[in-house]
Length: 513
Length: 99
Image (tube, rainbow over the protein chains, first blue to last red):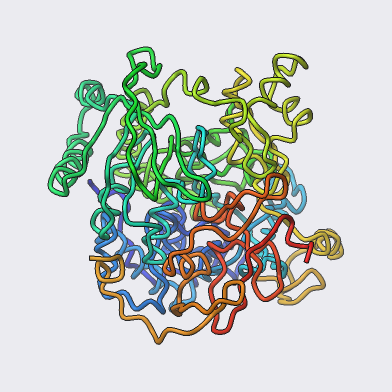
C-alpha cells in the first residue's frame, strides 16, 4: 500500500514562529492519536502551530497501530502489524515534535465533549476558541480541560456486530476486539477460533490469530469478494490494495485456514461459554440455504460486520453529519461546516488507515494555515488529495461488496438478546414494532429500553434499526462517554472564560493551554 | 508460537492478583482483561436481568460488557484498566452495588 501522501514528518523546529497574535503560536487540539490524528498533528506542528494531542489510550497509535504496553517488553511488535515503516515514521516524528515542544501528548484522556466557547467577532466565529473536556485515566473521574483555537476530530470508529442466537456467550468477541487484545495485551481468548462476518478486517484478524498460535478453524465471509475484483478492476491505481488482499489470501492458504465465502454464522452454542458455532451457506438473495448448516467446534468466535464512526463529538458541536450518522461532512480541506473544526479519518466515512493518513495530513495543513491567518494553497497537498480521491473510490466499491446478509434478522429467535446492556430480546423489539406500532429506533428504545444502557446504543443500534425495518439515524449523544455527575456540576463553574490566562489549575480540574 | 513469543516479549516479573480470592499470575503492562484471558478466564460478570456470564466483547472500551469489580470499585472496564500487584478482582454480579 502506498504511504507516500503522508508527507515529510521530520521537520521539527517550525514550532515557535510567531502566530497572528504575536508571541504565541496558535493552538490546535487534535482528538484521537490514530493514523488521522497523528498525521494531522505532525502536519500542523511542522507549520508553526502548537498541537495538543488528546487520546484515550495509554499510548498513541489508535486501533490500527495499537502497540503492546511498554512493560510487556515486546522486541518484535512489528510481527503483529502491517505498514510498520509508516508507523515508525509517525512515532519518531511525534517523539521529535514532543521533544521540541511543538506537541503536547495527553494519553489516557477520554474526551466527552468539545465546547465552542463563544461566538467571536463577525468573520471569525470561532475566535472564542474551544474547550476540550476530558476525563483522566481508566477511572475517568478526574476532569481535564484543554483550550484551543481550532480542533481536529480524528475519533476513529468501532465495530458493528449484528446479533445472532448465542452472540452474548463469553468467547464471542468482535473481530477488532480480538485484534486489539492481541496487539495491545499479547493475549488470545482460546485455542480454536472461527472468524466471521463481513469486511476486509476479517483477513488480518484471521491471519493475526493464526500467527499467534490460534487454530483458525474457518474464516466465514458472508459476501462474495470475487465481485470486488470485478468492481475494483474499473478503478485506476488500486492494484496495491488488490495485492494486499491477495497477500492475505496466500497467508490464509499457507496457514491452512479454510475460507467459506457466502456463508454466515447462524448460531453460537454453549452454556456458560462458547463451545461451537453453526455456519450455513447463503443463497444469492442473502438467505440461509436450508440443509447447508454445519457445526464447527471452537472456543472463540471473532465476528464483525463493518465499522461505525465515532461521530458524537462532531454532532454535539453542531457539525453536519449524514442522516445515518455514518460520516461527518467535510470539504476538500477536511473542514466541517463549523468554523474552526476539522475532521479526518473514519469519522468522515469508513476508509481505513491509508485514507486516514491522507485526510489527517490535509486537515493538519489546512488548520495550520488558517489558524495562522493564511489562505492555504491546496497545491501543497496535491499528492495527499489524489490519494484521498482514489482511496475513497476504492472504499465506496468495497462498501457495495461487503454487506451483511440481507435477511440476517430472520436468524434471530424471539429470545435472542439484541441490546446486550439492557438484555432486550428480539421478541421485545418485534412486539414494539408489530403490536405497539413503533416506527423508528427512538420509539423502540422508549418502549423496550433497547439502547438505554452503558454503551448508549452503540452496540445494538444497527441491529434494532434492522429489526424494526427502519433506517439508522444519528444517535445524538450529548456526551461521548459516561461522565460523573460531580464533574458535570463543576464544569460550568469556570463560567464563560475570557481570553486564556495561562492558568493551569481551575476548580473544574487542570486546564491545559 | 504464542502471542508473547510472536512479539518477542520480555516482560517484567510476574506478580500475584486474586480473582474471587483465587491467586493468579499477572504481568506488568497487562490490562485486567488481558491478565484474566492469560489465566484462561473469559467471563467475570453476570448480567442484572438474566444473571448471564459476560466478558470481553469489543475489547476497546466501547461496549461495557467486560465490567468488573477491582479493589471494591465496581463497573471498571477490564479491557482498559491496567492490572496492579495485589489487585483484588471480583466477579461483578448485577450492578456491582449489591454486595
